[in-house]
Image (cartoon, rainbow, N blue to C red; front, side, top):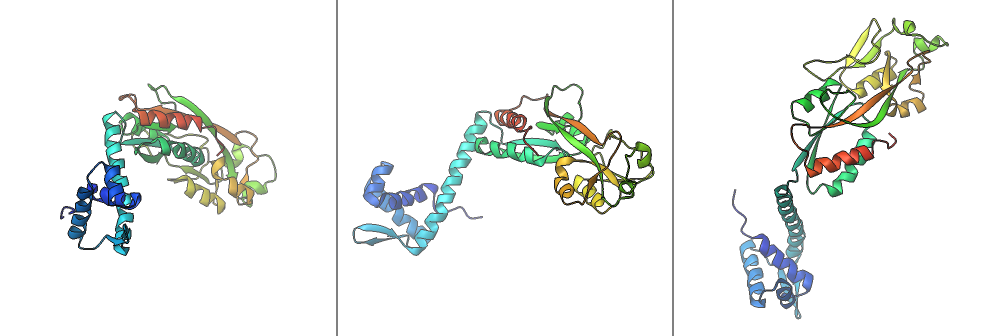
Length: 297
């Protein structure tokens, strides 16, 4: 790949000529001589092979090509400034990236609000967001992959911050045989019907959570698939209420009238990697996750 023929400083000089209205004004703003500014622009035009400025009366004005190139150069200089700022921030201990692992049942709306608030404070720090189920979060926290982790499991050896619980409700399609019984249901009623459950994404010691008493169970890998199967009438499941608000309102799902266990609150916790001290970006993001954990969603 050929090296660029025009430097960032040359593009900055051209911008100064246009923004300040001429060579003399640009020279004053850049603390350079007018001849130096004129030479820089002339040399740019020679290197690029296209005219960038033309003299109209006593004022330098952009050509059509110059206008296009100048507009692109502004983005180039902005990115260069951001790159230098990121390097400085990293030198000050600011992370280039934060690895955030989240239990799939955690409300996306709460997380999105925290990430939105983090963006203007991020100083170029990227967030790698990964969703896991049950012990999948625990494994990534313990093996050092996660800087921050949101889990519904009380992980031994860690001191978490408690977040707002997630409500799970037992649901089925309104035409499901369980609803057609037209009475309060017991767990015995559930045992002979298909239950849809979410597979634990952990590979070492996968967990089973909640009621699993049905003789026939289908196991899926994500919440969306479970919801779609239940909406098609293919069984029942406990699903996070925030995931099925629309389906409940539209009558695609209905809450099962269980005598016990119709609703279940799953506690959620925020963990940080205990083997390395969180950097400033991870600390800010953690504070925002806690702050927005009680947002509706």
